[in-house]
Amino acid sequence: RNSWLKPSGYQDYGYGGYPKQLSTSNHSAYEAALSLLEGANLVDERVVAVSLTINVLNPHANLLSVVRVLFEFSRTGNVMNSAYISSMRGLVYDLDSSLDLCRLVLHALFYAMVLYYTVAMLRDWWR
Image 1 (cartoon, rainbow, N blue to C red):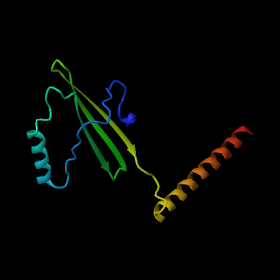
Image 2: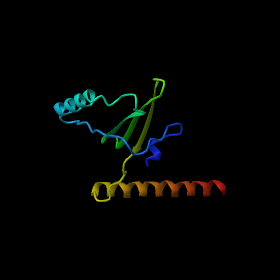
Image 3: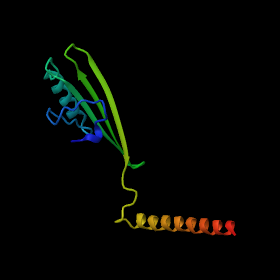
Image 4: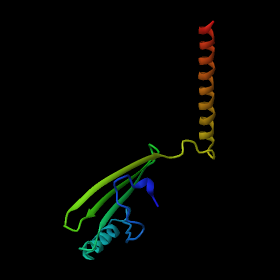
């Protein structure tokens, strides 16, 4: 289960349901899928919840975000909505790339120099 995606307070609906993936590259396929969903009357009196999950990747910032909007239908006809957003960074270094490997070595050298000079300054300060 994706418990990391379900913060406290959310109801757990399990794995059942009918997922539908919408196209992001083909606009006519997107419109056709949306028309099919609207025409199928998928939301009726027996539906408990509708969840919309969107995964967004920003390659420039190396950031992956998961946006989940949950619509819960009560027996009295009320609709309660809630949203959850989780963002995480991808890999910082790709060790197969020579440029990233060089950057890793330079970062390690920089941190080693900072640590060395900090220890040297503290040693001089305590004398």
